[in-house]
Amino acid sequence: MVEVRKDQSLYDVVVIGGGPAGLTAGLYLARARYRVLIVEKGDFGGQITITDEIVNYPGVASTSGRALTATIRQQAQDFGAEFLSAEVTGLDVSGDVKTVHTSRGDLRAFGVLIATGANPRKIGFDGEKEYAGRGVAYCATCDGEFFAGKEVLVVGGGFAAAEEAVFLTKYASKVTVLVRDDDFTCDASVAAEAKRHPKIEVRYDTELVAVAAGQGGLTEATIRDARSGKSAVWKPADGGTFGVFVFAGYVPATDLVRGLVDLDDHGYVRTNEHLETSVPGVYAAGDLRVKELRQVITATADGAIAAVGLERYASQMSDKTGLIPPRPTDSAYERREREQAERAARSGTSPAPLAIAGDSSIRRPVSGGNGARGKAVGGAVGAGRATGVSAGSASAGGKTSSGFFNEAIRKQLDVVFGRMARTVTLRLDLDDSALSAQLDGFIGELVLLSDGKLAVERHTVEKTAQSAESEGAAETARTTQSAYNPADVLPQALPCVRMCVPDANGSPQPTGLAFHGVPSGHEFNSFVLGLYNAAGPGQALDASTTKRIAAIDQPVNIMLLVSLTCTMCPETVRASQRIAAANPLVKAEAYDIAHFPDIKDQYNAMSVPCIVITKADGSMLVEFGKKNVAQMLDLIGA
Image (cartoon, rainbow, N blue to C red; front, side, top):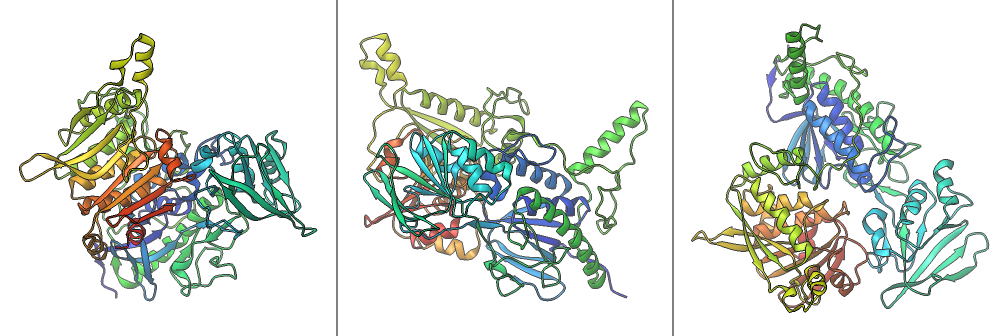
């Protein structure tokens, strides 16, 4: 007879990837009272978070990708799922207990779900690599605004190409879609919107061969007729610059399991009907596996199917080994259920049975149904964003609020402030502009909510309105930002908020963390994590990464050009500022390009995030795209 013992470090399942598939699997597993950990190296939500509008998810009339996945994550968390921000570096899938190696230590689990998704495919035309970020883009949501009033080429004939072509008409004067085949390959209803849009021209049997640039951006493209093989030069009608958006499918992110599980000729994971791979206990879900359709709904379906298979597998391994992970017994969901039942009992109605809060070894029967009380798991999804700044005036915990932060965000802030080891003083460098007034109000309320963990210092330049000779001129001056030199290593663009921490005498001294503009939208989370990293203890780093950061012995300046609408920027800002918080020789300052276009033009940046690294010897590197801590250290050369 196998001895039964609890193992506090053991998980039933580790899910690698926090997109729709991974989050849904976590939801199902946690609801069935299995211990599940979802590991994600970037933003939880996956590729779908860059989709501005989703109108074909059943039961949800309209939402954004970020809002949809934020709701799924909250559901999973309410059922007891755990989350870890880390990069998975390797797997040991032999034996009954598998090991997942991550940048934050090793994890042990009975089962593993690979849900790492896929990445945008590069198609290899001449100039694609050279002009990436300077006219060639892969995300309409992040980079569409750079091409306002300009023509753009869209390359591709699938769902993404059709949908994003329509989205780009919000900015572009005209969109020309280059489809390699004789028609779109996506659903006819999706293609129809692009075909009938007055600002979209579709060219079938057409390939992009090359792009060339001149002053200020791309100036011409070489396109080829796929039938005749003849090439021609394409230029925008106004003779100016243009953009290229590539939506040519995705490459599965399967390097982690290459050589471990069976893949097809294109690198996609082969699975059986239960979504188990060729290795027992290793499952795959979402866009990285072999299947007919890759959409958010098929990803969530995969997550549910894989979760049910993993429930069975984890249960069998627990019985076989006698090991029992500490499974969730008092989730937020179950607490709400008990409270509702108790209220119903007091009112004299007949409530549903109370949830059993018994021993953690008790498991619910494995089932593909909706659970003990027959309640559907997939609820309605709100259209609001999960994080950022939103209107609201309610107070939290007796704190007065002027309306920048809603109740959910205030609760999240309370958690962060409660963990901060020392006070952070926010130094505001302000001018007489309306944007400075907005930053002042934003930071003022944040400080008010911090219970003393934040303080504020205000430094205001001479008011530009003082020299105005008329009331009208003075009003104009109050909305004008102060001048700055965009060619400086870190331009002193105002307004700016700098994070300062106390020195040995208790006086606030600037760290290398700063934000120019107002850190709202998608940058709010990265700003709050910057506060936590500056205050300590900060986000955990593994020994190897800590050693690499400490080895930086010369000044490094990192300028980050970001957009508040970009979902790829926050990870890059977080990574850079995490390094700066750990090494005083590193400065990492973010600039909202919406307010500082001269800096964008200085580096001909037409994509975000744009990373400008300047070292002590004067050498400069300009890079584009989402980066984690390890990738930023690679760029720095640490």
